[in-house]
Image (tube, rainbow, N blue to C red; front, side, top):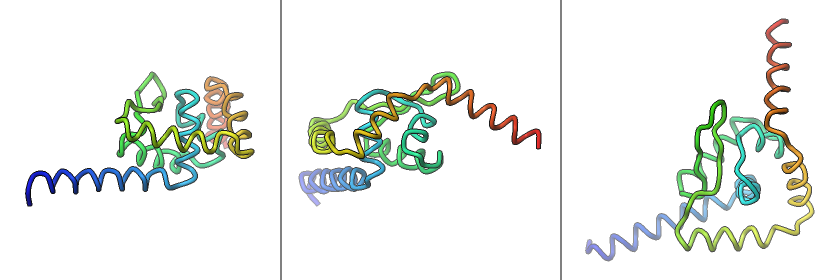
Length: 134
């Protein structure tokens, strides 16, 4: 196989993996929220109403194809949109612009912006104490 054919095949696989990654409604929502601001898993879990392992799995898939990156800060890993190639940036812009005015997305955005990371951590710590005392 010539080097040019190999590069095309590699690019096709990369593009296919990226399209597959954003082909899931939960991952689209995660990308939308992270386009607003960086967030930890607990904030994304709270906003989307999904379990932590589910959110973490989706974030890992988005991270694997280069859409998001996670940075460890004290007790949290903060996820944000990754610096990306022009084609990924354009693709993300198209997706975000198409869903921005959707009622479900507007509701999700309102919940997300109202969240307080410190308060979420406090509530979870209290919940763990109650469970441990039983």
